[in-house]
Amino acid sequence: MDYTEFRNSLRNRKVLVVGMGRSGKAAIDVLLRFGADVTAQDASDPSKIDTALTEHLGKEGVQTYFGRLPEDMSAFDMLVLSPGVPVDLPFIREAADSGAEIIGELELAYRITPARFAAITGTNGKTTTTTLVGDIFRAAGRKTAVVGNIGNPVVTEAVNAGEDEWLVTEVSSFQLETTKEFRPFISAILNLTPDHLNRHKTMEAYGNAKARVTAMQSEDEFLVINGDDPAAMALTAKSKAVLIPFSRKSVPEGPGAYLDGTGIYVRDLSGCEHYICDTGDLRIIGDHNIENALAAAAMCFFAGIDAETIGTAVKEFPGVDHRIEFCGNMNGVDFYNDSKGTNVDASVIAIKALRNNIILIAGGDGKSQDFTELAEHLPGAVTALILLGRDAPIIEEAARKAGFTEIYNCSTMEECVRTAADKARPGDKVLLSPGCASWDMYTSYEVRGRHFKQCVKDIIDMA
Image (cartoon, rainbow, N blue to C red):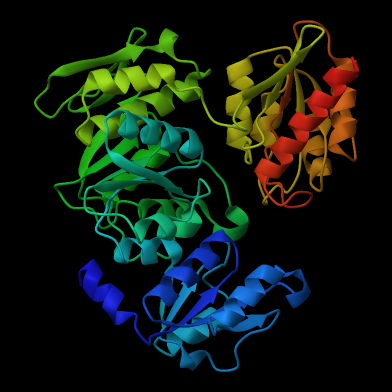
C-alpha cells in the first residue's frame, strides 16, 4: 500500500511501542497523529521515566507499562520497537505468534512518507558520511533532512516530508533488523568489521542485518559499496541494485568512485570520468576519511548531483564531533576526541590516522569484542595506554600479550586526562578512542566525548 493508505490504516490500530528513547517517543507522537490506539512499554523502573513524558502520555490517553509487561500480548496488532530492543525477547515473540506485525521506527517512517531515502550503513564511518552527504545535498539546493542513528528520529521528519524531499539516513544494524519494506533510492555499505556481537551473536547475523539496507532495492536503484572490503562486497549477493564500488586501492572497471594518484574521481554509467577534488583539499584526516569522501561522492553523484557541487562541499566539510576531533593543545601536546570510536576497528582507524607518538585513552563496555587487533596496533604507534571502565582488564590482558606494558589504569575521565598530560611530551597526541561503548559509565558516546573535552579544557585552563 502507498503511504496515504498506510496512514489511514493506522486509525484505531492497537500498537505497542517498546522503548522510550528518542525514537520511541517520536513514534508514539506520529501514531497518535494518525489515530492509532497506542500503548507504551519500557523496561525502566517508573521512577526513572521522565515525568514530562509520563504526563504527556497520560494526557494523550496512552496506557503505559513501565518496568513491567502487558498481560495480554495478543491484544496488539503491531509492535514498534526502538533500536535498542532485541527482537528475540520472549514477549515480542509471543506477540508475533499471536499475529502482531513487528517493525521498528525506521520501517514506520518509511511507510508514512513519500520522501526519498539515501541510507548509509556500515560498522564505521556512518556518521561522517551521512553528515557529508547531507551537506552536499543541501549545497545542491535539495530539500534535505539528516536523520536516523545520527540522533534525529527518522519518523519525526518523515511525517512532514514531501515527494521532493530527501531523508539522508544513518541506519544501524539494530534499525535494519526490523525493516521489511524499507527501500532507499540509494544505499551504502561502508565496511563490515566485528561489532555488536553481544546482540547479533555471529558475524553472519550482523552482516545479514546490514544487508537489509539493500534487500528491497530494484534494478533502478543504487548500492554504493566498499570495493576494498571483501566482507562488505560479499553482501552484494543480496542486492538487485546497480553496484557502485568505491576504492582507495584500485580503479573499478565500471561505474564507481576511486583515487587516481591523489585525485578523487567518479566514473558514471557510460564510462565518463568526473573529477571531484584532491585528497589534499580534505579538512578531515586519515585514509578512512578518504573512503568516507569517496562513498559520499558516489552516493551524491548517482543521486543526480553534479561533480563540481560535490567537490566544493567535500572540500568545505569540517568533520563531525567526537570523531578524531581536535579539541586543544597544551605545551605542544594535541588532544583529540574520538569518543565515537566504540569498537576495535574504529580505534585502529584513529591510531592509523594519527600514526605515532600517541597516548591512547581506551576502555568501557567492550560488547564481547576481541581486543587482539587493537593490542597489535599499539607498539610503534602508542607510547602509553590509559585504561578506564568496566572492560579495562580485558584490554590490558590483550595489550600485555602483544608485549605492550606501558599501561595505566584510572577510575575517572579526569584522572585519565591528568595522567595523559603528565606522560605527554611536546609533539605527542593524546587520543580518546575507547574501542568500547560508553554504557558502563555514560549514557552515550556524546556525553563521554563532551566530558573528555571539558576535562581537556579544564587542564589547559589551569596550565
